[in-house]
Length: 287
Image (cartoon, rainbow, N blue to C red; front, top):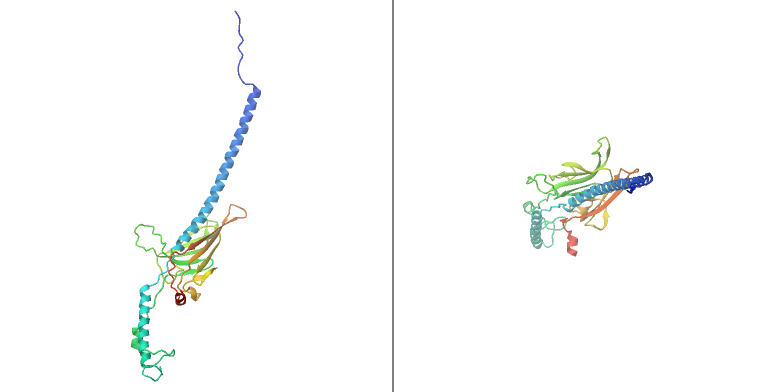
């Protein structure tokens, strides 16, 4: 009877050590790749969040400006135009009765040379005063105006779309650490429009760590070059009771995760959909 030797199959110690070493390198390489991927994702996500916050703030500012509300009472304008026309016809007839316009004649004249009217006639042709509450008060680093972009938090709330809106910079406490503070962008809103468009209502923080906020304006009398101030209530006569046609907004924030902090800037141009400005008589004649 012949005996057969069976050869035992398996790995040698050297082969096992080489396999374990290769597996260790692969595991280490994979873990490092995963770690770097997670860090890169976190960094990209943080950049997206910061850019998104900046973009969201500018988007809200643009919507508010686009809905800027400039009201003119057409009824008062029509009434005054009719009164002026009636007065002109009466003074014309009086001038015809007294061509020389002598002070001692039947119809006295005013210092301007036009026939004077009696107190009763002056009262009859009295013009109505138009009270204007809608305003646009813009400076280089703050802006207050009336808008139709009022947000109603409750459905069917008894509020109109009209509101006062303001943007300005002021320090605020950090949302994460109340002990820290920074310069913040504030948005003020008031559902009540009154004579002072720069005050009233409630304010809330839009974004923290703001380095600068800049506004520039384009409109009647300043169509060719941006200006850093636009006041419809005071200031230049050319901007009185008028809104700009476009506003440029530049917002710069600081990324405090870097040392020194890194600046992130963004600029948008917001056109006013309906400035509703009254045309000057001179420009109307030219056109």
